[in-house]
Image 1 (cartoon, rainbow, N blue to C red):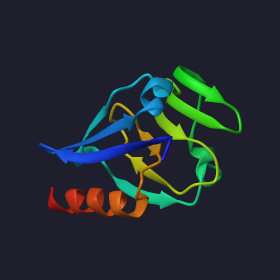
Image 2: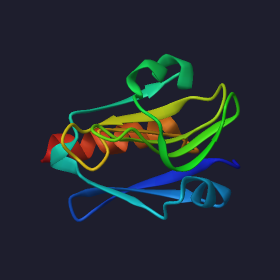
Image 3: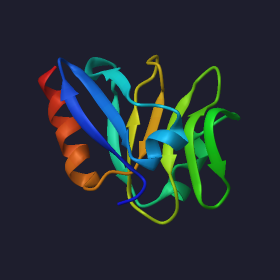
Image 4: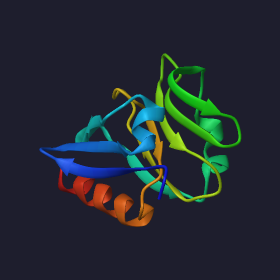
Length: 123
């Protein structure tokens, strides 16, 4: 899978790591979010389903309209995006955290969402 990230729970934090070319495009090696800051996690059918939640211009990263959006978007309520076209993705919402919205592809988006949900319920 060319454009995706891994997601793990480490010491009470969600750690999202872009893989391969995604790391280069997003200008990030990892994003760390405290699990206690996460209010919801969902899987979405594609980027179009959540596009309205992303506000602001790109502040670091890459954007090729219609193909890929990777990096930080927005300033006051920043989002982290690692998305392309027509694939299910993971949506993590965490108001007040470094990124209030994280959208990324994973090899198993439903499995990643379940893993994060389990971590949220344990805190």
